[in-house]
Image 1 (tube, rainbow, N blue to C red):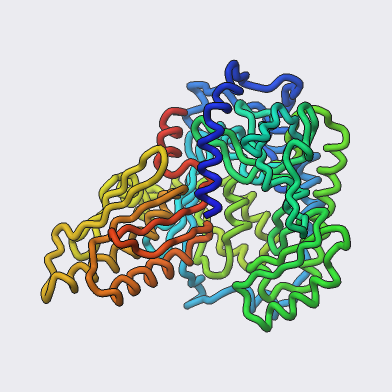
Image 2 (tube, rainbow, N blue to C red; image 1 turned 90 degrees about the vertical axis):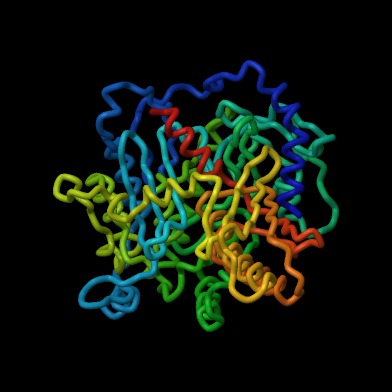
Length: 508
């Protein structure tokens, strides 16, 4: 019930947060002005530039901001490719048919009017959608590392407000203190004993600010690479459970030698069949990155951004892209070249799966080519039709999301119980798909149509949990209650698809 507890804590803090945020500044004092407007590259740890002001001329065509030569040199130093033999490259290249790449997924990246939109498709079905805007420098900050200053410690709420240089103060809970995260004993350190007002703390964002709520922080820092995750000043040692046991054993032997003594390391699923040299290079790059963050933090006594996660296309490619993807199609020439160069370093066997969609040559726009806009229109509607004629009604409230399952036009053929059962099976699959596509988080209540047989109820829940297992966002699901309701939580990181589209329209 961690997610529910977190939401309740947030709600209790709302009144206090509103009081704290009276007279909010657009920018906190002491941060200074950024002298460059260039977008940071992979591994860039410069302070965030001010969000560019909108200008009528800038809405005609997006011009991607380039980094200076110094940052390009830093990127090349951080990302040194490992030479691989032809046999290794062949194994990692993925399936091909008649000289063309074959895969389950496709990524379409559309750039227009300072907005980057990323559509993830399974076959022709849209499964995830992301939007990145210039204003996201202060709203989409998940994973960023800051030097923060404690503004107010609230023992009764077991939380503290921390100024990290964003319009709203972020929240650091007692459970997210590093002294509690790394402590093996059952004794919990109280927040008022761990940190004091006006004290500086090194912290990382684990949840973006949403509406009137500030970002959520943790003191347990982690740096994600392509193959491993570095957990500084920790004894963490882990390997993804999605990997086969034989591969886990091989990677464990490599990690025992590659792991730094003072830091923890977690091997990601993407490390399957990866060589020892590539893992060592990834670990070394992350350690160097951490040393630079430490160096900056030692020189800072005021709120400051120390490390920013890379642009969304690079971040998603780092997290998601593998040989199961048929292609990544991009309609911006500059971004296409940047992504291709990035993949030539981190995944050279898959670099040829990057495709440029030239809008001056192709009569059909990128999203029209993959029928993305039609599916987005349906994803923004509150009513979703099921294949057999049933429907879902999705309604959002401040506290939770309610999904009602109806039989609608589905009249079945044999009996009421069988009709309801088949309808609920379709609904279970579609609900899991909609939660992922719409990025719905928090508490979710699903009202399935009542079923008499316990076996049918078990089958529906089994199908539902199986579909949710494909979602990388953490979920927790309870069984069907006596009223036919299913209660669940899905970790909320962002604002959701509907809110993202609303903001994008406001920016135009």
